[in-house]
Each structure stands twice: as structure tokens, then as C-alpha cells.
Length: 302
Image (tube, rainbow, N blue to C red):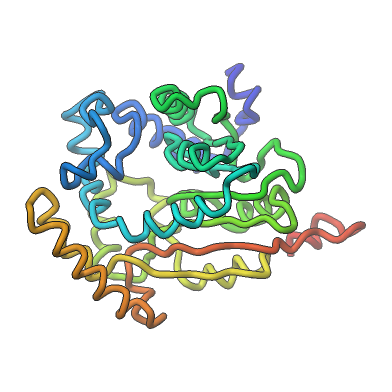
């Protein structure tokens, strides 16, 4: 209770309590790095077994992580984006989970903090920071992402991975607009809901996610909503044909097959209509539409 008061997490809405409970279950099973565990051996995180606290529960509650074996192209894209921007900048890992992106930004020279509504996630993030030897320079705090405790215009760079569909998007956009500097930039990595086969899989695996999460997976129409808060919104689409490589992720065929399918995706997903059926959308936000001096909060939130 005291931690909740300090973190501003008392009197939360039911949907947020459900998210905390869902995260608690997952974060007590796995310490992090899930995107780099169930893949070809040379791409796995070092000593993955040390991160898995309950192997049987891991099989059930992380059965979908095999799909992240094909995300090398989107990972490279957003990490190159961060690498070009983080050095000497104030960086926020927004809804940081177990903190992997905050750690990456710190290694890129950022003055970094990660926030998450899950105390278990923050504890894992701190353990992972110690594991990578950056616990003194990369900080983590329990915080509600829709109502942070940061001052206005606090951050140069923000990164979020798979978090916006856990939130009320308008509340999140308002808060991000407030805490980002006028010349600040943000990169978001989010799943898309348009592909009927992918979304059917989500509905058939309710133990992997909350009901709120399933019903709030982003669409390309949400880019228009983001433009109400940011003057510049740009998107790229990843991983449609590449999903066919997932069954081969533990074989010697995996790398050449994934490279070939990534090339197919680069051609297919240039078309925005086809792009909406991809699994992942990576989009950037810049030039936040700041509240004008004397403008009322109600007007700013319109």
C-alpha cells in the first residue's frame, strides 16, 4: 500500500488493476528478454534459462514468443533510430516492462529512466540493469503512464514497445505531448489488428493477454488520432510473409528463409493497403502540439 501511494497508483481503475495482475503473473515467470529466448541459438540472449523462473508456467504463458524470432528487421530499424538519437539526451522508456529498451538506450549514451505500472516489472528491470552493469545510470520507477509525475517538456527521446494498446490512447497521447520537449521525438512499436488470422489467434489465446488488450490493438486509423497531438506522425510496416519462417526458427534454414521473406515484405509492405495486414507497425511521433499559454485543460484535450 505504501508503494502504491508513493507511486501514485492508489484508487486505480479496474482495467489498470487487471493489467497489474496480468503483468504480475508474467513478470514472476520470466525476468525479461522474451523477444530473444525462443529463436535460433546465435540470436538468443545469454543464459536464457536463468531468466525463466517457472519453466512449466513459461510454456503456457509465453507460448507466443516464438513469433518474435522473425522481428530482426523491425528490431534493427528502431534500434538504429535510437542509436542515432540517444547520446547525451534525456530518454524515457514508456511502459518499460522488464526494461530492455531503457538498457539499450543507456548503452547508446542516453540519460535514461523507465516507468511501468507493474512493481514486478520494475523489479525485473532493476535486476536486468544490474545484470548489464548499468544500474547506476539507468533508473526505473513504478508509475502510471497516463498520469506520470514528470514535469512538462522533460524528455528528448521516448521509446515504447507494445504498450499503447494497454492504455487509453487519448490519455497516453496527452501525457506524452506534455512530457516531451517541443523538439522531442518518440518511436512506437505496436502490433496491428487488421489481419484476421493474427487477430483470431489473439482471441483464441486469452491466457496470454487481457480482454482490454485484445480489444484495443491499434489500427492504422489510430495514426490519425496521434496527429491530433503531434504534427509529425510517420509509420512503417513489418512482418507479414516473414511469419512463415517461425516454424523453422531452430533450424539451419531459418536465416536464409527469413532474409528472403524480409525482402518479400519490403516490397509488399510499401503498399499502405497491404501494410495494414502486417503484424507490426513502427511509427514515430514528433513536434508535439503543446498547450498554448492560457489555454484551458479542457480545450487542450479536445
